[in-house]
Image (cartoon, rainbow, N blue to C red; front, side, top):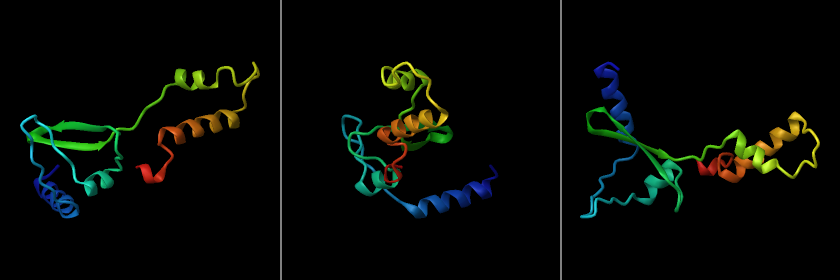
Length: 108
């Protein structure tokens, strides 16, 4: 990214939320409630931390990912041996996503 663009991008992001954190003797930090709300993180949830070049880091809310095996496991025993339609499978996926928080707009 050209330096001018990076500089403008940094100015834009810095104007949204500026927060200074203090590191405890145990190496821990506490995020202000407003920062967690901005990230869409609720108590008990996890945060993904990506280490970037130049001593920078990027934070985002960790979102659970599922697998086809997990979906199949949720459906096991609920179909009475019959083949599901595409609509029924989509409904099951949507329901699982909602329960996992992926479909909750306030959760993002």
